[in-house]
Image 1 (tube, rainbow over the protein chains, first blue to last red):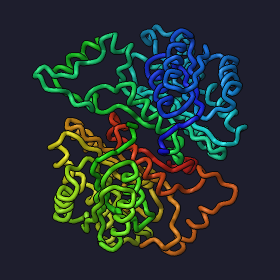
Image 2: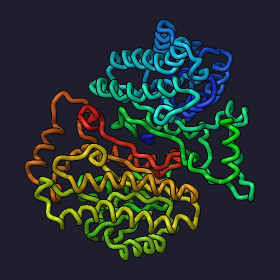
Image 3: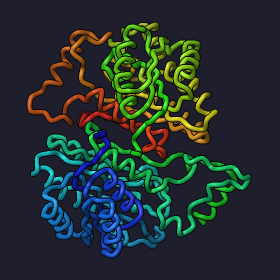
Image 4: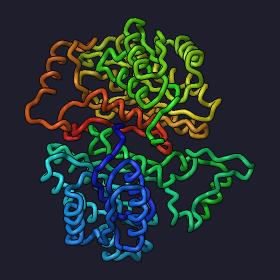
Amino acid sequence: MSVFDLQDKVAIVTGGGSGIGEEISKAYARAGAHVVVAARKLERLERVAGEIREMGRESLAISTDVTVPEQVDNLISKTVEQFGRLDIFVANSGGGGFPPITEATLDDWDSQIGQNLDSAFLCNVAAGKVMIEQGTGGKIINISSTAGINLNPGLSAYAAAKAGMINFTKSIAVIWAAHNININCIAPGFTATPGIRKAGYVPDDTRKDGSKVPPLLMPNEPEHVADAAVFLASEASSHVTGELMIIRGMFHMERSDDVLRERAQLTR
Amino acid sequence: MSRFELTDKTAIVTGGAGSGHGIGKSIALAFAAAGANVAIVGRHQESLEPVVAEIEALGRRAVAIVADVTDPNDVNRMVAETLDALGPIQILANSAGGASFGKPEEINPDEWTQSIALNLNGTFFCCAAVAREMIQHGYGKIVNIASSSGIKGEESMAPYAAAKAAVINLTRSLAISWAEHNINVNCVAPGRIQVPDHAIHGMPEPEYAKRQTEQSAEKAKPLQLPGTPEDIANAAVYFASPGSDLMTGETLVVRGSEWASAYS
């Protein structure tokens, strides 16, 4: 068995019904884990859970609002009830949406911090408590964003919350080292999720002169983020904690005229 | 096939004899276990041969190359000999390096220059020589072994820490430059690593004794203790594998919870 396998581990992935979370859930199942997928929309979760069961792994879809403490507790207790334990927790729920900064209210701000940072606090602590009780360690993976390292002029509250998540990860990593719980962050850059692709934000991989854009100069595919999440959930990263893995290639360095045009369109 | 396999890839590992903490040797063995054929590079034939034998026992091909990475001519020969023995090179792990110990105000200029040569120049010469080859094929994975001291500084190892900081920065520049050629360049920065049960060349006896005591702390959990060479090797496999295809220019620090110290 490889140190990258997750054979028979029990994982929870929030935001597991679509995009990056869906890809992480399936990658975990391929690596051998049983996966509980959580999000607000049960229909999407059921579809992912069904696909995981087709891979021969067990799966559970639990409708959860990760900003509500009782619902997070319910997610954890249902998982333990069904599988007897919890080994891996991926806090992937979140999302951006903010009015122009001069029009933003405290409610707008609170909503972004709630969705992206409070949710991480609630999920990390609830998962950590169970892992401490089990006494066999665990893996917690927080999905932040490159917005949390640099900035995002259109989504300043989202960027601030994601920065908070990176810092929070470090503090609890040190606290829970005594329980052998690894807590790390992944910061994906621009990722070509089906939603992003559908909205027309992903540039063509062929330049107008007919040459192919090398993969490192294209946006991430969700699977690239999922690979990092498998590494951080596996024995291969057993001495890595409190760290940040940035997944973004060099798309931001691509300077061909076509991409510059497409990007100008994006920010207009 | 798993995203973390290196089946039939050709890798070069410098510092592959593992004469220090054993990181280079551990990387060479982990690459072979993941399916790669490996050229092991070091300064002494006799210390490379046992590693070659271990890799062959895993059913992979291996070749020992005696070279000094601080000499660009040796580095060019290293690439040529690897091509001859194992074919086109897809992976390079730069693990050759080493620290000298002493108070900064007492370091003589030769010691400084030697440390920069071994830890920085050697890494650059190998990256450039191997990349010239990788560019021909439009694919490559380079893993530089830096150190957490290159991020936070180190009381008694100033030249080493400065060189490792430069390796972290060099990694970013190379990653930007070679993205067009589909070459990923990343760093693994080990924190404290368990000292082996033999003395480490250049490490003063009191320092060695202190580290031995550190790693036998009672009641401490693995994340609170120094790591192992295998921890570094696993991260190197990750950066050598398709599992890190969209990661470049980055540094992964492998140091358990040493975070708790200041300036980390």
